[in-house]
Length: 430
Ligand code: ADP
Image (cartoon, rainbow, N blue to C red):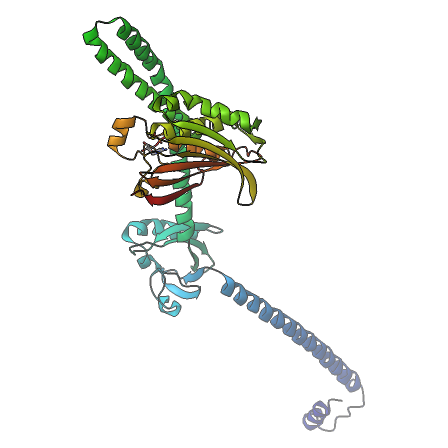
């Protein structure tokens, strides 16, 4: 053992007997120390191997994380210069990532945002602090970034830059939409209240003008009748507006009942029978086989049909008005279609699309000739929507129109008030 040590000892201690005491014990002790040192060295090597393996693994994991990170990660030194950059470049930080190194991060901020950035950098250097600062790019359509700053030792700050433009935009849109909806509800509620306030004095005007017209001398009667006529027209407008506003404000509930179709159709037609007879029009009802009972809101459906029948009679000078009722499916749902046909003046093609909009009338001369508010069909559309149904119109200008209302066999409560409409122009009569 330790041949080299023994040789050296013999060379320097001339004639020494290494087998005599104390040399064997000395050599034994040296041996033992070497052995222990060897064991320690092996242990240290193993430990180093293990930790460097773990280090490599942790490193790989970190690299993977950084790669998967949706953000740009910048290191900024004590002078505010970018010293490294990883992750995804964004529109505003689009310089090829290596190219950002050496630049002052502050210079990427617009003049108006630099003071906020400075304050954020100071705050971020506090131990344990994470500070967020907003960055807006200089483009025509500015990108918005959220930059999180945190100190990571020795004056270095890490800046994590995330592009939040889309999130902000959709958030802005959501807020705008909520605002618009709230405004629309407020408008409808206001209208509903106002219309009520208007109706009360109007009823007094109507009552007094009618009473006075009966008793007034002949030269005043015509004026009083005009006042009365205008008052009635205004009342019609206000009533229709009140109905529309109440629907839009979500104040109208749908009451579903079993409705016997034959009796119901007769009741709808009865409301216009006198007017039709006075004009010499034939007024018929046809009910298809298999149509018996439907589940719907009777009052609302009646209001729709009376409106369509009143229009049909109003806009027809000769011929007929008919109400036909048939079983019909729509989108695979069983239902019933009510068709109001007339042989009247018809509707020009370009007008059809506007027909169900508020205050839409074909033209001023029609209004002068026939009166009306232009709100009836707009109200019909909303009422049909509430019933889960739809309205449609087909018309030939100069020859007549057919307005149809489809409602489901089994009523739907709380359907969308914006009923689908279908418009068909079948040409102009020669
Ligand atoms: P109005 O109170 O003016 O009748 P509506 O909304 O009920 O309001 O109708 C809007 C317009 O649609 C009418 O002014 C008229 O020009 C046209 N219209 C409605 N029904 C018919 C019909 N059956 N024939 C011809 N035109 C019609």
